[in-house]
Image 1 (cartoon, rainbow, N blue to C red):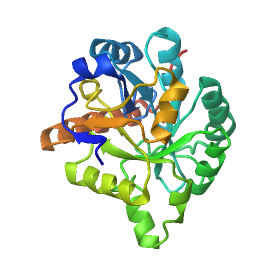
Image 2: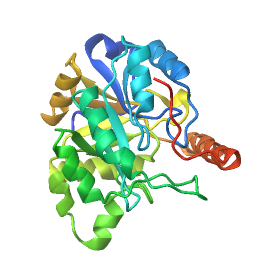
Image 3: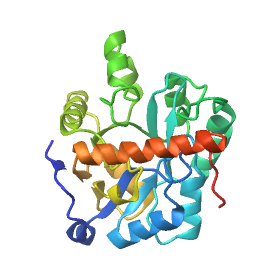
Image 4: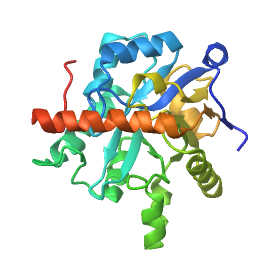
Length: 272
């Protein structure tokens, strides 16, 4: 695909021509991240980019960012995890839609884990999340499709049933937390299925924010999402290497262990 480039984004030049958004990020609201909203916003402002805050089964992070820093371009989003422990990125045209969707469907169905803070998922089957998200005109994207465990590709291949792709709106072509070969396979898959593509850092540490971004000439959230639907966007990003992958994994594990030791619930809320 000509609209996907594997390289470190030259953000200082890109922001002159495009609305630049990291479409896959995490804050302290996620059970495996400890980035505060203040530091998160500071990083975005220093880079000059926007973000979709896609915390795991939680929206308090994105609501806090939008309220405290209204000048930052924020795409309403969430990373929902199904009963099968598979992730799905959902993007909404408005924060009202995101809030209603979360309060009606995700929040009441978050599966409690008394002894395992390493897992955070819902009671909702994958197909069901896809179905109800369509009622809100959400843009439904497969994140890191080749990732072991959380990726959906291996499950579909094992079942020899790819019918679920009919209900998928896009595929994450560059996830900076994944290896180059896995991203290339995901991009190839998107091409074969003729799906739109997105890019995001999947940042769990602040320094990786902006490593992969989605570009559009649209200046509104609704217009930005629509440009992706119509394949009028671009994706530029770098992939992980051994050291960056090890660094990110170490932070994620420390945050999970921190929750176990503190005996807190998996869901961590931020004040809005």
